[in-house]
Amino acid sequence: MQTRRIELEGSAGHVAMERPRNSATIRIDCIMGNPQNEEQTWKTWEIDPSIGEDELFRIAQEIQRRCDGVRGSNSMVHDVLRELQRFTD
Image (cartoon, rainbow, N blue to C red; front, side, top):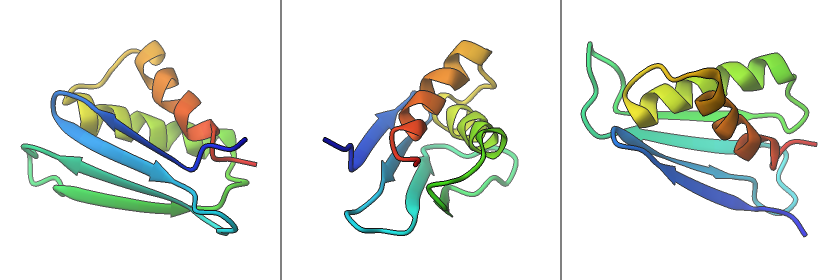
């Protein structure tokens, strides 16, 4: 069994992560409810499923910050990272 789509919501934003069947990429759409300091309201990533752990962690950090509205602790980032890892090879 494989996970195809996950949606997460925080106090400041929402993210949808998906990897359609037979797709060569993972698509991540992140929407912020009230962006600050000229941040983009909507941000999309399309990443290769064999992405390295360091780059995946950086994306998880940004997703966590955009969804929660604050820079979180490592445990908060790791919660997002675990969900992202469901889609990697």
